Length: 230
Image (cartoon, rainbow, N blue to C red; front, side):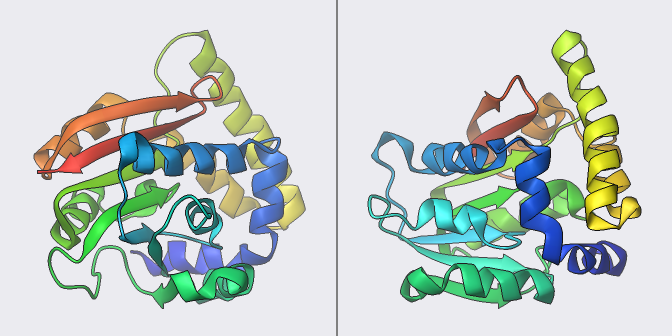
Protein backbone atom coordinates (compact mmCIF):
# COMPACT_ATOMS: atom_id res chain seq x y z
CA UNK A 1 0.00 0.00 0.00
CA UNK A 2 1.22 3.52 -0.73
CA UNK A 3 3.24 5.42 1.86
CA UNK A 4 1.03 8.45 1.24
CA UNK A 5 -2.11 6.61 2.43
CA UNK A 6 -0.17 5.05 5.30
CA UNK A 7 1.02 8.45 6.52
CA UNK A 8 -2.49 9.89 6.14
CA UNK A 9 -4.04 7.28 8.43
CA UNK A 10 -1.24 7.69 10.94
CA UNK A 11 -1.91 11.45 11.02
CA UNK A 12 -5.63 11.09 11.74
CA UNK A 13 -5.38 8.14 14.15
CA UNK A 14 -6.04 10.31 17.21
CA UNK A 15 -9.42 11.57 15.97
CA UNK A 16 -10.37 8.56 13.84
CA UNK A 17 -12.79 6.89 16.25
CA UNK A 18 -14.43 10.15 17.30
CA UNK A 19 -15.06 11.12 13.69
CA UNK A 20 -16.33 7.68 12.75
CA UNK A 21 -19.05 8.07 15.39
CA UNK A 22 -19.91 11.65 14.51
CA UNK A 23 -19.88 11.33 10.73
CA UNK A 24 -21.92 8.12 10.72
CA UNK A 25 -24.26 9.42 13.44
CA UNK A 26 -23.28 6.40 15.51
CA UNK A 27 -24.08 3.91 12.75
CA UNK A 28 -20.52 2.73 12.10
CA UNK A 29 -20.57 0.43 15.14
CA UNK A 30 -23.79 -1.23 13.98
CA UNK A 31 -22.31 -1.62 10.46
CA UNK A 32 -19.35 -3.52 11.89
CA UNK A 33 -21.59 -5.70 14.03
CA UNK A 34 -23.69 -6.51 10.96
CA UNK A 35 -20.57 -7.46 8.97
CA UNK A 36 -19.34 -9.66 11.83
CA UNK A 37 -22.75 -11.31 12.07
CA UNK A 38 -22.64 -12.01 8.33
CA UNK A 39 -19.29 -13.75 8.78
CA UNK A 40 -20.69 -16.01 11.52
CA UNK A 41 -24.22 -16.51 10.22
CA UNK A 42 -25.71 -19.95 9.63
CA UNK A 43 -23.69 -21.47 12.43
CA UNK A 44 -20.32 -20.74 10.79
CA UNK A 45 -17.65 -20.98 13.50
CA UNK A 46 -14.20 -20.00 12.24
CA UNK A 47 -11.42 -20.42 14.77
CA UNK A 48 -8.67 -18.27 13.24
CA UNK A 49 -9.94 -14.99 11.75
CA UNK A 50 -7.95 -12.32 9.93
CA UNK A 51 -9.09 -8.72 10.41
CA UNK A 52 -7.13 -6.79 7.80
CA UNK A 53 -6.88 -3.02 7.41
CA UNK A 54 -8.18 -3.23 10.97
CA UNK A 55 -7.39 0.33 12.08
CA UNK A 56 -8.08 0.91 15.77
CA UNK A 57 -9.70 -2.50 16.27
CA UNK A 58 -13.44 -1.84 16.24
CA UNK A 59 -14.15 -4.74 13.88
CA UNK A 60 -12.14 -7.12 16.04
CA UNK A 61 -14.08 -6.01 19.10
CA UNK A 62 -17.31 -6.80 17.23
CA UNK A 63 -16.07 -10.37 16.78
CA UNK A 64 -14.41 -11.33 20.06
CA UNK A 65 -17.67 -11.51 21.98
CA UNK A 66 -18.77 -14.32 24.28
CA UNK A 67 -20.96 -15.93 21.61
CA UNK A 68 -18.30 -15.76 18.88
CA UNK A 69 -15.51 -18.09 20.00
CA UNK A 70 -12.63 -17.15 17.72
CA UNK A 71 -9.11 -15.79 17.77
CA UNK A 72 -8.35 -12.77 15.63
CA UNK A 73 -5.19 -11.55 13.95
CA UNK A 74 -5.66 -7.77 13.83
CA UNK A 75 -3.51 -6.41 11.04
CA UNK A 76 -2.92 -2.85 9.84
CA UNK A 77 -0.13 -0.95 8.13
CA UNK A 78 -0.29 2.07 10.46
CA UNK A 79 1.65 1.81 13.69
CA UNK A 80 -0.31 4.72 15.16
CA UNK A 81 -3.60 2.95 14.52
CA UNK A 82 -2.23 -0.23 16.09
CA UNK A 83 -1.22 1.63 19.25
CA UNK A 84 -4.87 2.56 19.76
CA UNK A 85 -6.00 -0.95 18.84
CA UNK A 86 -3.64 -2.45 21.42
CA UNK A 87 -5.14 -0.26 24.13
CA UNK A 88 -8.74 -0.94 23.09
CA UNK A 89 -8.31 -4.72 22.91
CA UNK A 90 -6.39 -5.10 26.18
CA UNK A 91 -9.38 -6.74 27.86
CA UNK A 92 -9.48 -9.50 25.23
CA UNK A 93 -5.76 -9.72 24.50
CA UNK A 94 -5.66 -13.50 24.94
CA UNK A 95 -7.82 -13.76 21.80
CA UNK A 96 -6.15 -11.04 19.71
CA UNK A 97 -2.77 -10.86 17.99
CA UNK A 98 -1.72 -7.48 16.59
CA UNK A 99 0.49 -7.21 13.54
CA UNK A 100 1.80 -4.29 11.46
CA UNK A 101 1.87 -5.43 7.85
CA UNK A 102 0.82 -4.56 4.30
CA UNK A 103 -2.39 -6.24 3.09
CA UNK A 104 -0.80 -6.78 -0.33
CA UNK A 105 2.20 -8.64 1.13
CA UNK A 106 0.92 -10.58 4.12
CA UNK A 107 3.50 -12.58 6.11
CA UNK A 108 1.37 -15.73 6.32
CA UNK A 109 1.59 -19.15 4.75
CA UNK A 110 -1.04 -20.26 2.26
CA UNK A 111 -4.36 -21.41 3.75
CA UNK A 112 -3.66 -20.06 7.24
CA UNK A 113 -7.08 -18.62 8.17
CA UNK A 114 -10.63 -19.93 8.57
CA UNK A 115 -12.16 -16.53 7.74
CA UNK A 116 -11.23 -12.94 6.89
CA UNK A 117 -12.93 -9.59 7.26
CA UNK A 118 -12.06 -6.09 6.09
CA UNK A 119 -13.88 -2.96 7.21
CA UNK A 120 -13.51 0.14 5.03
CA UNK A 121 -10.04 -0.79 3.85
CA UNK A 122 -10.30 -2.42 0.43
CA UNK A 123 -10.55 0.81 -1.51
CA UNK A 124 -7.34 2.04 0.14
CA UNK A 125 -5.29 -0.74 -1.45
CA UNK A 126 -3.14 0.10 -4.46
CA UNK A 127 -4.88 -2.78 -6.25
CA UNK A 128 -8.18 -4.32 -5.19
CA UNK A 129 -7.56 -7.32 -7.41
CA UNK A 130 -4.12 -7.96 -5.90
CA UNK A 131 -5.62 -7.56 -2.44
CA UNK A 132 -8.39 -10.08 -3.09
CA UNK A 133 -5.92 -12.57 -4.54
CA UNK A 134 -3.69 -12.20 -1.49
CA UNK A 135 -6.67 -12.75 0.83
CA UNK A 136 -7.68 -15.81 -1.18
CA UNK A 137 -4.13 -17.13 -0.80
CA UNK A 138 -4.18 -17.06 3.02
CA UNK A 139 -7.73 -18.47 3.33
CA UNK A 140 -8.57 -22.16 3.52
CA UNK A 141 -10.97 -23.54 0.93
CA UNK A 142 -14.55 -23.01 2.07
CA UNK A 143 -13.65 -20.03 4.26
CA UNK A 144 -15.61 -16.81 4.18
CA UNK A 145 -14.48 -13.29 3.36
CA UNK A 146 -16.63 -10.32 4.39
CA UNK A 147 -15.86 -6.84 3.05
CA UNK A 148 -17.62 -3.82 4.57
CA UNK A 149 -17.14 -0.82 2.33
CA UNK A 150 -18.34 2.43 0.77
CA UNK A 151 -18.77 1.46 -2.86
CA UNK A 152 -19.21 3.75 -5.85
CA UNK A 153 -22.73 5.18 -5.74
CA UNK A 154 -25.07 4.18 -8.54
CA UNK A 155 -28.17 6.02 -9.68
CA UNK A 156 -31.36 6.84 -7.82
CA UNK A 157 -32.38 9.23 -5.07
CA UNK A 158 -30.75 7.25 -2.24
CA UNK A 159 -27.42 7.35 -3.99
CA UNK A 160 -27.86 11.07 -4.65
CA UNK A 161 -28.30 11.58 -0.90
CA UNK A 162 -25.30 9.37 -0.27
CA UNK A 163 -23.17 11.54 -2.56
CA UNK A 164 -24.30 14.71 -0.79
CA UNK A 165 -23.54 13.16 2.59
CA UNK A 166 -20.04 12.15 1.53
CA UNK A 167 -19.23 15.49 -0.06
CA UNK A 168 -20.71 17.95 2.40
CA UNK A 169 -20.79 16.11 5.73
CA UNK A 170 -17.83 13.74 5.65
CA UNK A 171 -15.44 16.03 3.79
CA UNK A 172 -16.33 19.30 5.52
CA UNK A 173 -16.96 18.16 9.12
CA UNK A 174 -14.18 15.59 9.02
CA UNK A 175 -11.68 18.15 7.80
CA UNK A 176 -12.58 20.66 10.52
CA UNK A 177 -12.55 18.22 13.45
CA UNK A 178 -9.43 16.32 12.38
CA UNK A 179 -7.65 19.51 11.24
CA UNK A 180 -6.63 17.44 8.23
CA UNK A 181 -8.94 18.42 5.33
CA UNK A 182 -6.91 16.48 2.77
CA UNK A 183 -7.63 13.20 4.57
CA UNK A 184 -11.36 13.79 4.66
CA UNK A 185 -11.45 14.95 1.06
CA UNK A 186 -9.85 11.62 0.23
CA UNK A 187 -12.66 9.55 1.82
CA UNK A 188 -15.58 10.72 -0.38
CA UNK A 189 -13.42 10.93 -3.50
CA UNK A 190 -12.13 7.39 -2.97
CA UNK A 191 -15.69 6.08 -2.59
CA UNK A 192 -16.88 7.99 -5.64
CA UNK A 193 -14.06 6.60 -7.76
CA UNK A 194 -14.15 3.06 -6.37
CA UNK A 195 -15.80 -0.02 -7.83
CA UNK A 196 -19.55 -0.44 -7.92
CA UNK A 197 -20.96 -3.31 -5.89
CA UNK A 198 -21.57 -5.35 -9.03
CA UNK A 199 -18.04 -4.78 -10.31
CA UNK A 200 -16.62 -5.74 -6.92
CA UNK A 201 -18.66 -8.95 -6.84
CA UNK A 202 -17.38 -9.85 -10.31
CA UNK A 203 -13.82 -9.21 -9.20
CA UNK A 204 -14.30 -11.42 -6.14
CA UNK A 205 -15.40 -14.26 -8.41
CA UNK A 206 -12.35 -13.71 -10.64
CA UNK A 207 -10.08 -13.86 -7.59
CA UNK A 208 -11.34 -17.18 -6.27
CA UNK A 209 -14.60 -16.58 -4.39
CA UNK A 210 -18.10 -17.92 -4.95
CA UNK A 211 -21.63 -17.73 -3.45
CA UNK A 212 -21.37 -13.96 -3.10
CA UNK A 213 -24.02 -12.18 -1.04
CA UNK A 214 -24.55 -8.51 -0.24
CA UNK A 215 -26.25 -6.69 2.61
CA UNK A 216 -27.00 -2.97 2.27
CA UNK A 217 -26.83 -0.87 5.42
CA UNK A 218 -28.44 2.48 6.25
CA UNK A 219 -30.06 3.13 2.87
CA UNK A 220 -27.03 1.84 1.03
CA UNK A 221 -24.46 4.20 2.55
CA UNK A 222 -22.39 1.14 3.44
CA UNK A 223 -22.56 -2.39 2.05
CA UNK A 224 -21.33 -5.69 3.43
CA UNK A 225 -20.27 -8.26 0.81
CA UNK A 226 -19.58 -11.91 1.65
CA UNK A 227 -17.97 -14.58 -0.51
CA UNK A 228 -16.71 -18.12 0.06
CA UNK A 229 -13.21 -19.18 -0.93
CA UNK A 230 -13.46 -21.80 -3.69
